[in-house]
Length: 484
Ligand code: NAD
Ligand code: MN
Image (tube, rainbow, N blue to C red):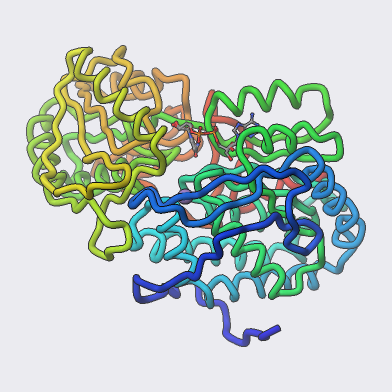
């Protein structure tokens, strides 16, 4: 192995955009430290949603593959859980550095397979992936100090981890880094539309000589995920995805003794007070809902604006929205890329129709010509939205914002909390006292103050209500992978 010698550089960001990531036309499963063909014969294609070109064909793991992966993770757990914490840390540091070294390739591949702008995969996703491994490498030999009073925190065993398509490699990092740091082994399944970076991660595990079976990657769709979470050899399940599937997993897990963390959907409020810096808030709104095409579980998709500045905010929002560049995700000037899949685009379009039918007014000021092929949705927002409108209640998971107003702080809080979800919230005001009072009363796992969609490996992320339970990141995130 090429032993990397550089020091951790979390801020490192890779440069150019058009790197040929050299995609093989066939991908296998990663079980027991080797790439192996599925025991079944089923495969599926992954496409570039910006061009509809087929990128590769992947194996669809069946029950026998899941058995093999869980067995290999079980065997590896016996050694890995007893490996000196300092040794485990070395592997995690190596992985983190290797991710930095391959950052350009990973960013391009992430953008090609999933449709997100290269600027985001290059400047946000991949640097955060590396940061997660660096951060958790540091925890390996400090777990006793992390939880004073708990004499001997122990790993749980084999973790089944199922992740979504909106931040493919970042969600992998959120799942795998803490699991390994705590001494667990994993079987992870990426989403069926974005499997490629997880398979590159498997290559990185090989390059770093991570012991066989500590990380297993199975590609497949919902059925593979179901087989994983229902497997009796699994000790812990970590899932990020839709609330619907999350509920199904919770039901299937009840009474099995398996540990479970769920990170599900959201319909997060972003609250703008009249005393806020409006121009700054506009940028926060843009970042909150149009980042990653709105395919963000914590997207600020319900905007509440204090009545006295509503007209100003709507005007400025229209103007700013008109400047967003929609199109080729590999172009470094693109702000909004492709919708991740045909079905997701159809879902978004259904909500757009419904919003108009319910009487809200749609604003879609962007005039960017859209490519012929691929899945595209011009970013937009609705005004004249009523709290009972479907577009104000359901997660759209697209570049669609619902704008509403409020008069008093009390009204802002009660309307913000009037949701079955509780993932995130944003508050914009110049009054420090107001910020903390309101933040403490919002039913949300994460509250951003005068900012939005900021992520960091040190800060816990997760929801309340139907947005799930358990935290990922920081000290809190470690709890989900330990028993005391
Ligand atoms: P999904 O929940 O079906 O998929 C997420 C992951 O779960 C994928 O890897 C999928 O293969 C797997 N999966 C599907 N069914 C499963 C099952 N029965 N058991 C175990 N794993 C299973 O999400 P989707 O269909 O891709 O998207 C639908 C909606 O979900 C979106 O419109 C959005 O509202 C929401 N969503 C939320 C997030 C999030 O980050 N919270 C991510 C993706 C989608
Ligand atoms: Mn794809």
